Image (cartoon, rainbow, N blue to C red):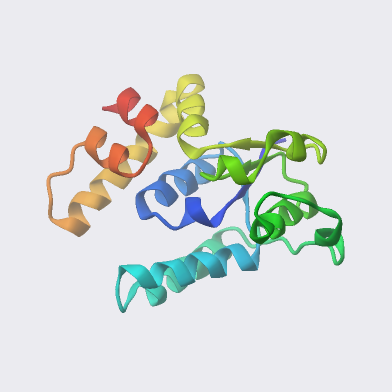
Amino acid sequence: MTVRVLIDACVLYPTVMREIVVGAARAGAFTPLWSARILEEWARAAIKIGPTGEAQARAEIALLRAAWPKAEVTPTPGLERRLYLPDENDIHVLASAISGNADIIMTLNAKDFPRGALAEEGLSRVDPDSYLHGIWSAQPAMIEPVAQAVLDQARRLSGQAWEMRALLKKARLPRLAKALG
């Protein structure tokens, strides 16, 4: 049985980070989970990149939903009322993780997901860089082709001669960048 990982919107929004995380899931490293609200947060955040950002995000969200039709979880009604996190706007993420029987919440917001509060619900928290580096350490052949495909796509789409280390560091994946760069 694979590990079930609820992916927070802050991990889905940056393109390179999302592509590596989703690529690792596609390679079988874990089973991804999210909620409709998390996906909506990603789409709204994508407006920042320009007039086509939201439309592009919504197209990518449709592809994710098609690839993983069982990944979208709906929090159990009333569950959010009994939960506490420092930022009440993140309670829906915790509720989604509980409702989806997740093992882990993948987020960049460590302070908003205290380990103690998560442990009470049988969950842990990981940041994408540490998690992906751990997978690479155990199974480099699972992560290396994913990273190479993302690098190739970044070069093709940007027209720039990206190097692996620079691309991954810019994507806030410094440990993985050092390992692969």
